[in-house]
Length: 190
Ligand code: GLN
Picture 1 (cartoon, rainbow, N blue to C red):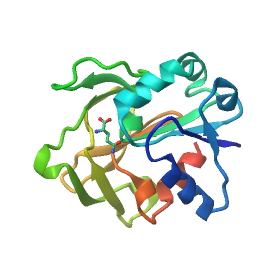
Picture 2 (picture 1 turned 180 degrees about the vertical axis):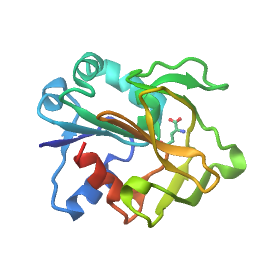
Picture 3 (picture 1 turned 90 degrees about the vertical axis):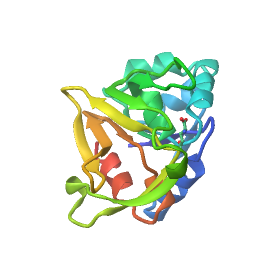
Picture 4 (picture 1 turned 90 degrees about the horizontal axis):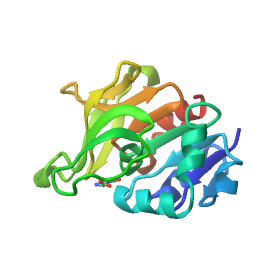
């Protein structure tokens, strides 16, 4: 098992710090040959338009599509979740290319200006009874989950904030910005 961090833009350093806390040294992935060396890839939060453009420029789109969900487990956090989505709703930015790997529809920046960033407890029964601390930063919202997609975590009002489709996982919050590493550990088991 070898863990990669997509290191084109965004908060990959925070993911690296979390993984180091339990003794895993993640590899930075920017080039196709670096991608070829990993079994797990985290696509961090950041700016999904920028990450999407850089994926094309660095010739990573085709190798990602070829391996995703088979011999490559992928977890996208926030902007990374947007990159994984099959469909995107975004009233301001119009159509933006995504990898379209997970059968989910997301709406970008969906929590409105007064809730641009917020914290809330998250229920994730697969991770145990204690709620996760949820940090949301200009987060997208899940608008629909396809039939093969399993909801993993919800806000107290029932809104889905994490989902999984086989070896692909998307979270709209940022576990790497908290000291709770259960989501990272769960991903490593995919
Ligand atoms: N709002 C950003 C986007 O749409 C995502 C924010 C984040 O990753 N924290 O790309």
